[in-house]
Image (tube, rainbow, N blue to C red):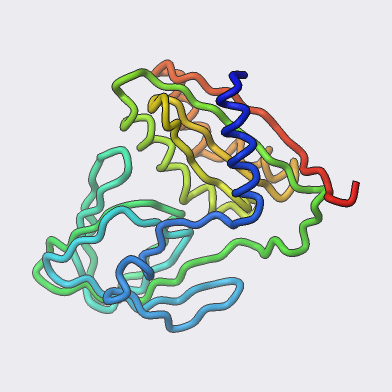
Length: 227
């Protein structure tokens, strides 16, 4: 491993172990569209509205349920660039796994519904000895950094929604833009093993092999300060 990579790992480890993973929260980005009705350590219930013609840039939702108050027609754009249109009617109930997308109301009416976001199990009971850190280096082809970045970002929302995920952040080299680093903290080794067999990660690794992207995974255990 190069000296630059070792320095980067040391710096990111110091920063990330003192902070939790933060997604692109639509409530913070679009307070005019979302209103909190209820929040506790298990769920967040939001009243959401998206006016006709309105757009929202890429943002993330954990696993969630939507109760549609006013039917809508929304076009979603995902990090890899593909699009999907969802059309609903009043009273529909929708379920979705964790997702990152941009949205645009292309219908003739304002969208309105109740969004119930699920939260993972609390992490406060996890001991320092159980925590497992995974640092992954991914190298793509020069000139195609955006494609690789989009693929890696698409993993963030579904992975952060896993009950064993504590931190899951992506970094890009400031000197070599085709090199990325994923910094992960897991509740324990079992949580990481469960992550490895999730459909979203298996599909991503298959694509990495097809595209010739190189992946190097290293595992780390935190050393308690009193040792």
